[in-house]
Amino acid sequence: MAIMRHGLAASVMGTALAMVVAVLPAGCANGQVGEANRPGTTPPSEIALAPSGLGSYLAARHAEAEGDTEAAAAFYLTALADDPDNLNLLRRAYFFNAVEGKVGEAAELASRLMVSDPTATIAPLVISADLAKRGQMREAATLINGQNRQGLNSFLVPVALAWARAGAGDAGGAMTALDELSKNAGYATLRALHGALLQEQLGNKAKAGELYEAYVKGGERPSLRGVQLAGGFFVRTGQAARARALAADYSQRFPDSLLLDNAVAGFAEGGTPPAPEVGTAKDGMAELYYGTASLLADNDLQTATMFNRLALHLRPDFPLAQLLLGQLLAGQNRHDDAIAAYRGIESHDTLMLAAGLAEAESLRAQGKIDDAVVEFDKLAAHFPSRPDPLIEKGDLLRQDQRFAEAATAYSAAIARMGAPDPRHWAVYFGRGVAYERTDRWPLAEQDFQTALRLNPDQPFVLNYLGYSWLDNGINVDQAKQLIERAVAQRPKDGYIIDSLGWAHFRLGEYAEAVGILERAIHETPDDATINDHLGDAYWMVGRRLEARYQWERALSLADDADLSASIQKKLDTGLSPPSPVVPRSAGRPAERQPTSATP
Image (cartoon, rainbow, N blue to C red; front, side, top):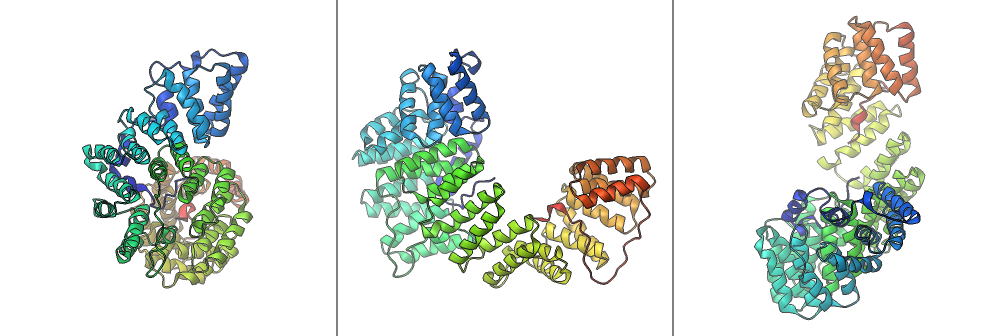
């Protein structure tokens, strides 16, 4: 699944940094891959181990291939005990232990690696994070300063060095380190923000204010995390209106943000100003690694997890990093660990909604539907003005084909939403599907039409309403036009193309139906219903052998008993000529609906 950053760090790091990640060779950002497989490293197939060590090594490689980083870390350590000087094992052991949050152990292993391979790139950052954690900032600065400035290190080394020097009492050296970023104009946003955080932490409010202004007025509009950091400073310096303006701008861009309340806590007139998010040099270094993890989250889950673990090692009470950790673990299908991470931040009330929704998603992914429903209900009670838990509950129940309960959940959500606006189309659409599947067609039609008014060109709504009208004999000409509009917007969507082909079939236009349904099969060859439809069209134009082939294929793909029985009957006796659709009064449309109707 995609990682839900909610805009917290993406533009804090900046577009230029995203471009750095994008152009790196595959795996180059990954500490384990980038260092373990470079020239001069012993290839895995040539490692000489005793039988016990070899078994552990093979088990580690298998765990690594399966994405089981916890097992990989343990097995690499066992293999390393049999061959303690093996650089390949050292690289993998330190990396996976860092991924698992065992940063102290990872730092010890990385130190052993650096003795034989001082050119390692990620290992020094792990070591220096542990040194900083233990208050050895001068040693951390010395180690960081000796590293190259290539790839991710082009920004990681200068910023980490700045915070290490600041922690060691070298304020001038800290700003000199940040000035390295000025060599790349694309790093201006990052330089301004960390410079502002650093100057505020050092007590230089005037200079901090200049840099915060440079950050918010830069080429990129601030992310939510940027709003939180800069806005907090503005509130603390008597500029609460400036902070609220930043928050209002973000809210206008992202009105459904789950974390806005957390970010703007303390911005209200007369409220208690928020404490600085970055109060120490360790906090600043943690901020860097949290932002890096957010940047890498959709590109390299394991390396993102490692950097996020560094952030939490430096700043254990870092709720946003804890939330990101859960999302990263969920992205690796480690849902029990993800849930544990989410539950670790439930005491932070402003983050409870985002954490609870993410926990419910992990429960759903594990098939624990009823437990997820309980979590949604708990959140709905705790946040009585927020529709989000009820919308998510409705989506879950609809996907689980519990349509009556889904309709109830959607109705409760709609009651909280106020006047409908374009972003609400999916809620009305979802309730419309739930109504249609529980034989309440007039209510379903009303919701589909509302969804279409809110988003007139939404292809899923156009397709679903058009298909329903056509199969029900209502507004036949308009129904076909709606489906044609949907196909025009999604010309490669086999399900929507199938709807258009089936429309021609239902209208008795069998030759036209064949060509369109063949297009649908080309795009989506493994759908039972589309194969069944094409078989019907072939039969009606006299291509009986091809029809039987399509029905047989449809039968092999079908997982619905009613559909299977219908196909088998056609294989046994053929297809009787259907009556073309005739306009009639409203009633429940056919069971079969476009598969991809869910937005």
